Length: 303
Image (cartoon, rainbow, N blue to C red; front, side):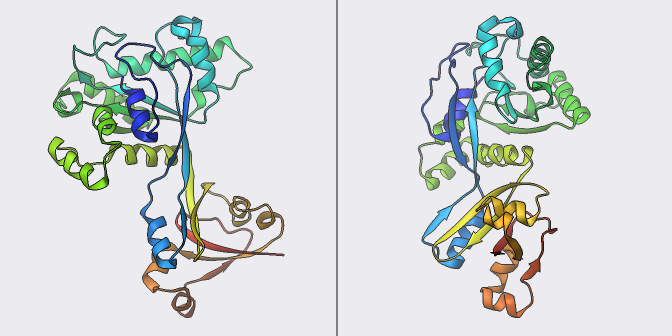
């Protein structure tokens, strides 16, 4: 519940929102900038004309119900869409509100999670040659309601306790958001957003937390290139070597790699200029075996 509302808040892209099950049939796709203050700081440092943040793609896929693996609720179509993504953000309702229609008679987040997991596993068993859904990383997005009866605000609630036990046992990642509030905020200016959040007593940016958590769930990190023309965040898989990272920019940076000059963002900003960083010995020369770290600022040298 709140899945499409949250998607709109993420992408500022209009998709159908309705207070009934199966409002989403065809998946909507949105490319979202990854919130990272380092990009803007580096752009100001270099007086860059252009700023390009890292990005991640979100797909709004219709929810599943019991029997989806057997075709219930257009389940086969939905399951096929899920097979095509790299990770799953499972939006789970954690508030009681009888005025909002649900496919379940009682709000029970762990039951909802078990239902989806069971349907995905059954779909895997029915399609032995298809990519295994059950192996995809999952981020649980716990959707609450401002001013409502939220399970996270009542830790003694048995449903909340069981949910937390499940997360601890499975080492699952989760974030808590208010989809309705985030949906209302999506078209407001930043200064108005802060005032709006204060009025609702919500001080964390749920959308930003969700994007960053998704980026991390996929095992992705960012390194940067910066100059007067452009500051850009480049996305690579955590653990990538310098040549592999260079390939994100151009294949020559991998195939004809010689070396990379590397400095951490914080160090570069603290030094105040490349000249001072070089004078202080903070710019390192790294070879093909170097494992790029999140936040590295890199200049590649190739033949």
